[in-house]
Amino acid sequence: MARRLQIRRIVGLVVLLTLAFAGLGYRLVDLQVLRHEQLGALAQHNTQREFLLEPRRGDILDAKGNLLATCVLMKAVHADPLLIAPHQVEVAQAIAPLLQMNPADVAQRLALCVQHNDQGQFVTNRDVLLKRRIPVETWQKIHAAMTNLNFGPAEKKWSKTQKNFYSQLRNQSVFARDDQLRAYPNQALAAHVLGFASGEDREIEGKVVQELCGREGIELTLDAKLKGVRGWRRTETDRGNHELVTWREEDVEARHGYNVVLTIDSFLQHELESVLGEAMEKHSPTSISGIVVRPRTGEILALATLPNYDPNNPGAASAEARRNRVVTDVAEPGSTFKIVVVSGALNDGTVRLSDPFDCEHGVFHYAGRYLHDHEPYDVLSVEHIIMKSSNIGAAKIGIKMGPARLYDYIRDYGFGQPTGIPLPGEVVGIVHPLSKWSKVSIAQIPMGQGISVTRLQMMMAMCAIANKGMLMRPMLVDRLEDSDHNVVVKYSPQRVRQVISEPTAKAMVSALKLVVSPEGTAPKAALEHYTVAGKTGTAQEVENGVYVRKYFASFVGFFPADAPELCISIMMDDPKVGYYGGQTAAPAFKQLAERAANYLNIRPEGGEEPSLADPPAPLDTQAVKTAAARSP
Image (cartoon, rainbow, N blue to C red):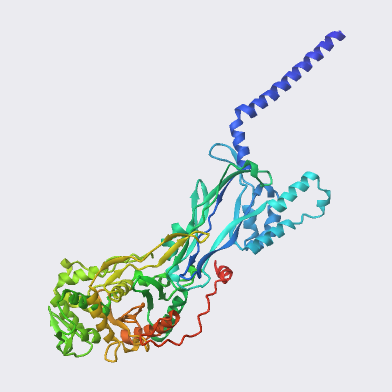
């Protein structure tokens, strides 16, 4: 009996052991075979990390290396909810004030989320973005707040496991990654050239990341060169989110964006904007623009439009203030356009400077229309038609020249076509084909009516005359450099075409010199030590197809006239105090030309050295953090 009981016990024990081993075996099969891929993926999700390595956006500099746009190192603050739970509230209360966020919102973001992914696997949110573009100093305060997080007197009784958990919570649960903020240390200086860049969410390999993207100006047109190429890193981490470097699988470094070096000279840009500001106060135009170009090369040394804006805070500016009117707006040019018809007629031999034209005492009836001069001129030579800016004289030259040849020169000077400047939003103006010309067009277009051009097109046409008849492409970018300042791409001046011959250009210069004489329309543009050649413009504006009592006033000129170093244009839209180009734009030209000649040490034509003012102080390129602090 006792033996039978003993056998039963042995059998029972064997059965129990068999069942136990069977259960263990099944568990092993389940873990190692049946759910191997699922569990492996889950483990990999919790330990494997893929980091996108953001490139630094390149700087934008002026021709002398002054900083115009740069990136400030910031921090993006992240959190690991798995290391924080169940202390979301305490952590939120500690860091929310420093993040300038609502504690309840932060606590909600810190909530641990366990869910199934598309493969039916359990996954957790171990990397939650709390806020981007946090100053480094603020991140240091956040890290200190987490390190000193107090959980009460119970800490003394914590076990070793608990101490390890809270150590990870304090030191590893909230972490930061490098981030960048675009900053413009000189505030509104050259705003319409630079444009601005701001963050944009983009999905990359299933992850939503934010990158700086150019919105306007050079920031937009050269965005691909400035932004660089993103890198990535695939690695393993421990439970504390520390990288296990020996388990790093892939490591592709980011290539930082190229630096863009412009042809802009910051000092001349500052002087241009200062002169435009003074003219804005004096004449109250709706807008005012100015351009400074080196005519031999087409290099743009300064370009500005007022009103402007601060690219550190573009959201505070209206869309109108952000318009770069130099390339986006068109208007009838008025009398500045007379350089096209006169130079073309001279080039073809249709007229000579001394040829006389009857200007009809200020009223000319042609093709059913009455054309008027601002003064009752009698007979004027071609050069005096330029000097006095006679509409009737220009119209008669155009009639003698003929529509086909006038149209050819309009196109050769670049009107109706993009100039090729690397700025967004450039329009080509309105140049009707010959088939659309009316009978009076051949008389109206020579005086700058019935055609619309951009301010830059008119400037480059004048530069062609200053450059012995050669039209240049406007040059705004000098070179691209890598992050070590090695030159990657060097740009050169580009010739477009020879519009008029060199002798014709020389004849035009002699006529344009008369414009700034006491008998011309722009004596207020004359300089003491240099001869100036230029042309005024006063165009009546058109609204809804009807001429209104608003004017577009301009002066475009260059100096020294016979060996031009600079070409400068000043253009005003609807000035309220005075409206002739010679009254409004010409004085601003003179003011800027004197400052530019002094700064560039352009030798006076008489041989006398100019009395140089104190050299300009270098621009403040240390104000980047101040600019960043003002940014939203």
